[in-house]
Image (cartoon, rainbow, N blue to C red; front, top):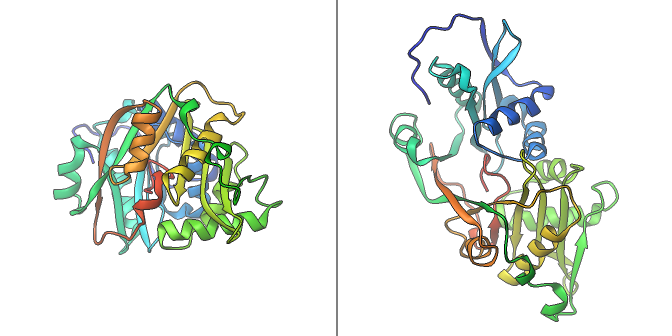
Length: 314
């Protein structure tokens, strides 16, 4: 939230985001040094468009601020994509989009990842006074240990199968298995949201199947972020070996990434931190504490290695 100290000398409109404004909003977010995957944000928008808010300079027909809080699991919203164009800051625009976004959430529980500089404001003034006791951990850089990641053949377990998702329409059986495994992690069903995410053309998805049970025991996705770095996530698995196999396959895939990786994990994910820091030798950039307005939604951190998105929680 920001405090306005100047008057607005243009026509400002705060309203729901339109479909063709998602990319522009993600670009504005990126120009502020905050990088998410455009296709992931678009998927969350498709899933819950009512809680994506923009501020528009109507004189220039330009988006100057945005904020989103899609409702995902356990009837909980998660606030992210919160930014104001640098030329329009200190006008109170951030407060306006924030308040309208919170209004769209209604009486539901709402969470966010607080950057250290804003932690006290969110916790003590904005109503996010429930601390989860964990943080989103942002790591990035040029990976130096991809060759050290385990492969399925080296694991020497013939009952495990590595499968690539060809398309949501073509491989419904695998999609259903991924959704079922995802529910074990989130302890809630994300069927509709996942179908939007998995269907994106720039997203590559791999899963490991246990042939004994014929069930997915881990899956992961990768796609470019807004500055074309490789962005893995979600990466969920039953154990470290499965997570390594999937991550290695994702990072070796033939996609349009530059040399850098943007990897988001949790302070509660010992395996995720090990992969990011010890195996890939990525640099930790920041930690954002997770806060909620009412309650802490259940989540199985033991199976999380990389977050789905830095903006909208796990």
